[in-house]
Length: 303
Image (tube, rainbow, N blue to C red; front, side, top):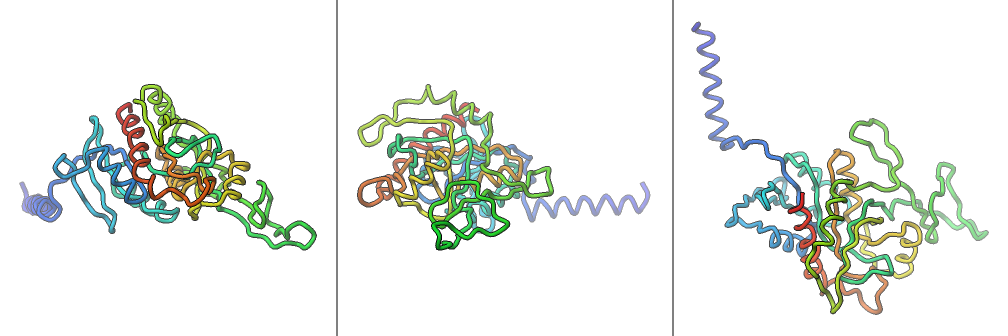
């Protein structure tokens, strides 16, 4: 062996030792299923439902202030984390997770407001697509019973007063130009798994009635906590939405942009303004989060 080769090998060996000392053993690349919730009641339900504790073999790490619990459930490697509330937090924190972990699927469980008038508090919806209700142009009244519309703007949906909904522009993982996307789809395979597990779910009750678990239809999300009956009726008229929340469409868009399969399970904690009197979310967010996680757990087991 010549001197130059000896020096190169010695340096390589030294660097390997340095990496082990500074970073710890290199962990084999694992395929991880992301299990997400947006805020404390949802996270408490997820961690309890999937046994995410250090004593149960889960490992806690923090990346840029976001806490991740990595472990296994039903023979699958999972990582559980909080996306944060609202569209921007959900987008940023899901992208952060995708950039730092070998995530193959994104699954979410949490609460939402019910929009479909046939649904009740406690029911669970698993939409097949997600749209934004707040991407819009806010237009001036023209004084003639209409509105002044900018030349660029095309009316695609029925307005709510001055609010004219618009489709968001998004880039596909293999694209370079933005395209108008009316709604972001969830993964067909995950949706089919959800359909298969519903008949085998144990009986779930909330408020003295049997909980419905419905797969399909549309969900919508925006930057507001919706508690207004008239706006709720408009959302149902425009999108035939089953539920409304503050994160799901952003999560679906990030998954779409990264080419990752996603499925979102939402239990109805309130009726988004359709109820009589004050909104009941405070008394429902924890028990309904538990219901949503119970459904999600069966989906993960069936994967």
